[in-house]
Figure 1: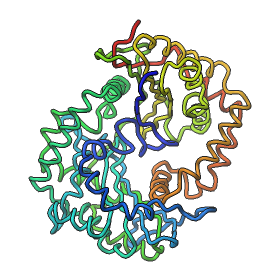
Figure 2: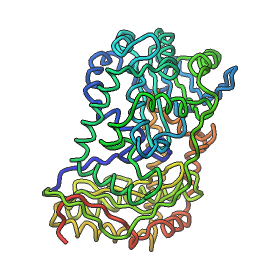
Figure 3: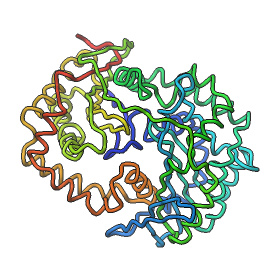
Figure 4: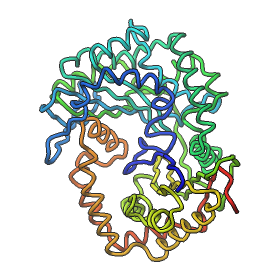
Length: 470
C-alpha cells in the first residue's frame, strides 16, 4: 500500500484555517523547527496545564470592551492558573506585494526575535525563564498571534506581547538567520510532492489574484525582503481596526479590559492596506502532471467551493464529511482504500477563504494505479451529486459532527482560537449555543441541493506529482 501523504486540511471553516500554506503557517512551524524543538524541553512540565481541559458543560462567552474600544471575547476558567490569548489581524499574506511574497511570514517569524530593550537572545531567555509561549504566523487572510502563560507571569507575558507588536527590533542577525531558515525550508519544500501540487493548484485556481501566491513566498522574493519592508508591513497590517482577540483562562473581564489597552492601545488605529477583490476559483478540468521520478503519485483535486458565509455552508459541510471528510467512514476511503487498497489515505475538505473558497481533496497511490484512483474519485463525486447522501448517512454524519465538536475544544488554546474564528467569520457570540441545532437542521433536501450545486465530477481538476500511468 502507498505511503501516507500529509496534506493539512482545514477545520470546520474559517479564513483563519487554511490548506497546505496557511491556518497558519508552516513557514513558522515547519521551517523553524529547530527553534521549536529547542523550546520543548523547557515546557514539558507546563504541558499538562497548557492542555488542561475546560470544565465540562456549557461555555459562557463574554464580550469585553476596553476604555479605548478594543474588543475581546472571553471565556473565564479559574480552575487552572493559565491564560491563553489568541489574536488575528484581518489581512495576512494576501497583502504581500507580489515582488515581496513571503513578507508576512517572515515578519511573523521575527516578531519574537527581539523587541523594545530586549535583543533576540534576551527576549527568548525571558520567555524560557518565565515559561511563556509567544509566537506569530501568517495565513492568506490573517496575521495571527498567540500567548500562553501561567497567571503568576502575566505581567511579563503581556508586556512582551506588547513589545513584539509595537516595538519589534528586526536586528540584522536574527533577520538574516530567519531568512536563511526560511530559504532552507523553501528549498526542502521544492522537493516535497504535496507542496509542489499545492502551489500548482493555487496558481491555476487563482491566476492573477493574490491567492495564487504562497504565503511562504519563493526563494527569489524572500531574498529581496529588507528591514524597511518589514517595518512598513507591520505598520500597515498591525492596526486596531483589523484586530480580533479571544481569551480563555484565569482572568476577569475587568482585568482583561485593562490589559487590552496595555497590549494593543499603542497600535495604529487604521492602516493603508487596501481591499482584496472577490474571486471565483477557475480550475481547468482534467489532469495536470508535474513529472517526478517517484514510485507513487501524489495528487490534489479540487473544485470551486464556498465562503464561510454561504447559505449552503452547513449542508456542504455535512455532505463533505460523508464524501471524504469522515476518515474511515467516508465514501472515498471506503471505495479507494478499504475495498481496493489503492491509497493509504484519500480525503476531501472544504477550504474557505475571506474572498473565495475551494473544495479540495488529496490522494497518494502507486503510479500504476493512479488512473484507477482518479476514476473512483470521480465516480463518488458523481454519485453524491446525482443521488445525494442516504438518510442514514446524513443522520450519522450530523451525530458525529455534533458529538465530536466538544472533544476538539478541550484546551484553553483551542477555545481561544475558536473565539477568534467566530469573530472573523461573524458567527455571533452565541454560536457555541446554536451550532448543534444548525447542523441538526440540515435536511436531506439541503444536502442534496448542496451536492448538486458543488460536486461536478466532470469539472474536477487534478494536479499530480509523479509518473502516473495513463
